[in-house]
Image (cartoon, rainbow, N blue to C red):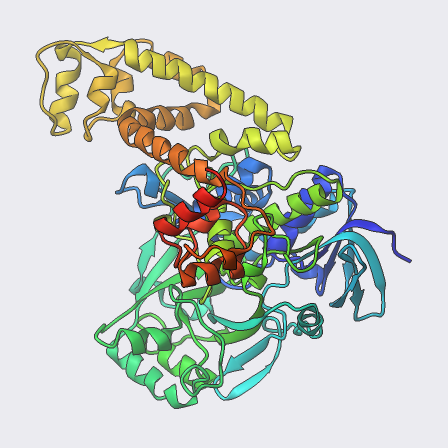
Length: 623
């Protein structure tokens, strides 16, 4: 009944969709198996993409040839660039999305890929041979064979939903859990554990008094995620801000004795940086209020997502407390918040390609690896899909360095440090964040994506035009002088000291108060030169300004990255006997045996490995 596939993808969430698209675009024959064909790329929690560090990841996915950025742009209802008051390394794009449109557009893109077939079914076991995994067994009784398998099961593996004292099996509300696959993996020797996440109530917007809330509009000049010319956002829907109060907190506390989180019924570890409202009240008891973000679910729906009010308390307590929030006196809910507990597999069991160490040709991506967030999942799916294709075609694995991308930081953190709570990306996790800005993701990664065969010729042509325009504008700014008469009025208006001699534009730009956008109208030919770059003009202007203002920081960081990257070029033999290296500390031997790092760089980043341990390894390897 079924063909023999190159790659089978299990799960059609954000990781599965990116994995299927990547493998199919590269030429593999792909089967995407999902429990619900109507929920591809489903935004199970908040209807948004991007945010702090996450926005950088989406732009990197796009630059490599992935699709999450394009889908985001086509379903966007609001755009904001976060952290604009800080340096450009911290700027992070965030979009509010139409939940239904996001999912349907993902499905449309996947169905246009003729290398992808689809099956609505549940995988409950793997088929292996002496080489590795070679297929899957499904609930409908099918045995389907392939050369590689990518598991992207999200929160569905033995998922249990908790609402107060009630709990029942489910992968998310209204959908059944995936049972059987965890047991199959454990038989191969894999180690699994449990994690927990949650989601808030959904509210009927007709029952909210928005006049009592703070309106949060999108940017006046909204950007986009993809570096391709996707449609620009011409209208936006506002979000709103509300606040809890002591009265709200007291009401919620009435349900603590029924909370599965507090009475011990939930064993899984929850996300530190996205806690439930009851967890926030318990951990930050001195806070008299917490901020809530009231977010529309789409263009044509009355449903609102109450970001910050995630809860697993009894539903009657949730509603009683919500109605004491200003603006929500008459709130009607579509469905209560709930917690979900599910199986994950600690990612120390993976290689940098996201292939499992125990079973060749088997890849894990997304929440099965202990991460949280659409963006983190999509990034892993992209890398797993690329590497599954390359593995079956006997090509070298594709791995991004920490100095090349946030995606590289994400995967390196997972496979070298593991997780003891749901992993979420932050800018602080990236030691090279000045290099890894959201604005230069295409400059960093589009050539790599094109070399892989994933990034289109259209992207490269557009990138070449951008690089040329950047070079021309940089040369203009560094060789054009401006007189005091021409610039002093602008300087005074921007609280910057006036000048008495002619100055290069680049020299003036080093002042924090001075911008290229402010200087362009003062200099003949500036506007003309900028206009020649067409719809890329704003990107070119931003890139040149950042490069000039932050040149010394960028240079120092690149020099440090080059120095440390040398360690990643020193491979460690897979059969090394760490027990025989008596000069290593006992902890180092234990950690190295457990992690089996592939390079000195990976070894150096394992918790418990000291610089002296690294020196011992270098001496042993003749370095």
